[in-house]
Length: 112
Length: 110
Image (cartoon, rainbow over all chains, first blue to last red; front, side):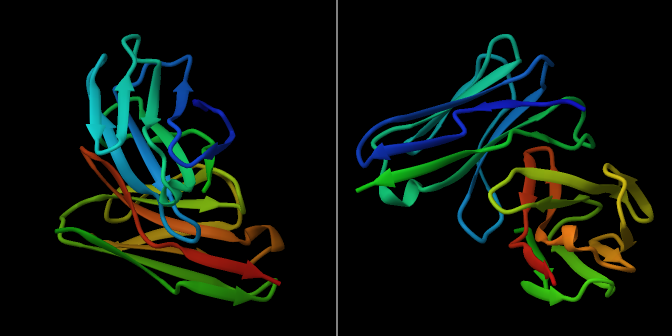
């Protein structure tokens, strides 16, 4: 099946540092989404991107839909302890009825 | 606004016992519904999805099954659980804006 290559797999950063993670694929996606999962909870949608080249912010989070439609990145500025969790990218190949393809996640740890 | 419920929140079951996990969605009609499983520290594995009542697509062959008896109800079942069925089970509903997850059910098979 389709795969998304998400990197890095894990990150340990100091509080206040900026964070960057990305997803790439050999396939062209129509939609890119970024989720965050806190321990023991379901993933929560952070940002959704619908057009190639689109750059969207949500507070300290910024994500971009790659111009080739095969990649996306998520940046977190000035990290804080509550940013800890697993971040997943997801892409949709077809219409709204097509299930998302998920990356394997980036585990973020923030050292105070 | 839309909400999604899952129960139970946690479950401990012996090997060979049956399973029934329930998911319901409020505040939307004819949603796409999904069941995912997440092993400890791992990614999300899509198990089943449904685009309408009685319509189930299986992504991974295994001893689990899914049913959608009502528009906003999605059930995950097994006749005989295996140790490898342990994990965190997540239900999600889909919209144009993306997929939205429930709180999950932590299943431990002993």
